[in-house]
Image 1 (tube, rainbow, N blue to C red):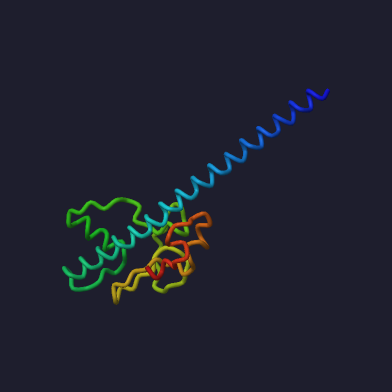
Image 2: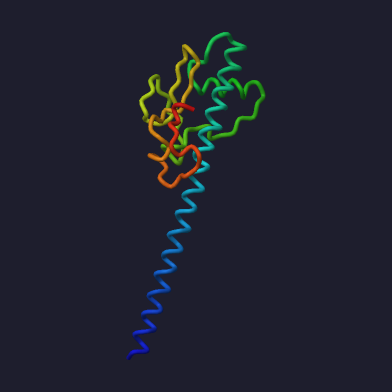
Length: 143
């Protein structure tokens, strides 16, 4: 009977170790995805800023919305990838556009001044708990 008990104990320890390693692997995967979400948002922000600047230079006015600025670049023959989004508040990406900086995710865009910002007013760590990159304590609306 002692032998059966020790086999069960060993099996229990092995199962516990496997579950622990699986949990660690999932956390590392989540960290990698968080890194991509931050960098994807920053790239999208720079793309929008460049598109708005080019639009202003050629049309002498700012685009009415962010979609127009991206469509303008496409009409100029530039290849723009799909997924120009804010990914900090949504893994799927958000393209919602607001006229005021309210922290609801997506983008803040002022079509009178051409200013575009990430509409996230809290630090990155509040949204991506397992992200420990250099932007962890930064507030995306200040990028």
